[in-house]
Image (cartoon, rainbow, N blue to C red; front, side):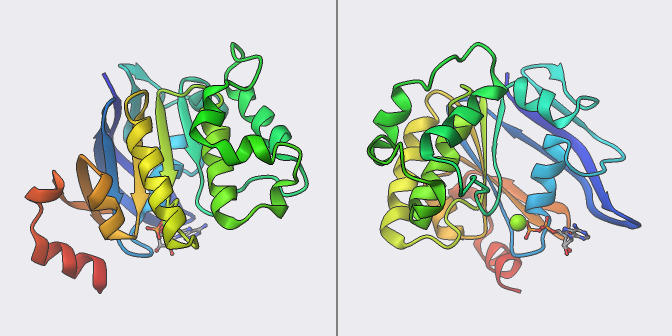
Length: 229
Ligand SMILES: Nc1ncnc2c1ncn2[C@@H]1O[C@H](COP(=O)(O)OP(=O)(O)O)[C@@H](O)[C@H]1O
Ligand SMILES: [Mg+2]
């Protein structure tokens, strides 16, 4: 059982930017989707979440078809989405940001304590406004907010963007630990980071998957070309 995306397309106005993307993210694994800027990574995630026009293709989670469901119901079905740029609420406190995450799962009535084991800094700063955290702390808050609802799949869009190297390493360690409890779908432009923590990698170029395999199985020459053009 897993998250399965099959032949998904997406359009903005007249233009088609995803041309039939298929991928699977399984529990116990970090599945990475890598590609350079503009390749269609974010659009893939938005189509997965029901946030862009998607004329064809299917999305299913553990065998349940989500394709016709609106975004909030996909989240309720168990997909935790951390958008690019984090999108935490800067005026709200850390605690309030985390409480908003609970709305995706009515069974969760308080912030699960293991969140603070994973992100101790958030416990320390519970009363601080989100906007007053560092970029790395905001990223941790965004991931924690998604985890509060106990999702079955955690979807991360460029969690390393604009974050200093030491914090990137910490986020890598957290993701590696989290995959024991949740399937992770990681979108990245930072190739070395993705290859380091991924168990399975899809490479996207111009809205199409051009390679798929374990990190060691990919055609390195082709990968370099795809990522650098
Ligand atoms: N809101 C939008 N309206 C029109 N075109 C868009 C929009 N967002 C993204 N695009 C285009 O879709 C393509 C894929 O973008 P995106 O999915 O954001 O790429 P990535 O996340 O891989 O950098 C790019 O050509 C981009 O210019
Ligand atoms: Mg993007």
